[in-house]
Image (cartoon, rainbow, N blue to C red):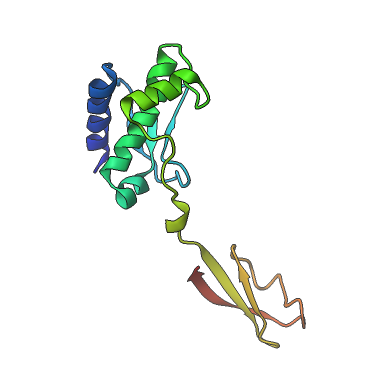
Amino acid sequence: MNQRELQALVEKISIDSFGRPFRHQATFNKRLKTTGGRYHLKTHHLDFNPQILDVFGEEELIGVIKHELCHYHLHLTGRGYRHRDKDFKELLQAVGGTRYVQSLRSIQVKKVWQYRCGACGKLYIRQRRFDTSKYVCGECSGKLHLIGQEEV
């Protein structure tokens, strides 16, 4: 699904489920990592995590779209648009949106950098890469060598 198809889907769901048009921009945002979508209060645009579609499918994405459209329509009509508000909870249940997206943490790949001391052979695992000319082994003060990057 590309940006244009996403925009059309959001507009269709807005008319079908809410009876109101969606007149702003809906986009995929690859920088979203732990959330399914985001509603921008100032611009009224919607962002969606493309991993939701890739991992969980279109049904889950539609639930997230309905969730974000609840924020959108309630905010524009001056009603309670926050998660804790009664208006939000009632509208979300009425349209069949998802309250929480399935966890994406289990599919996220974590990469680590591995270094080994040239003298004693001690292995160091770090999340960030560093300059080996500035640091030495904590055990024997030997020179550190970058082994490579590995997925955990």
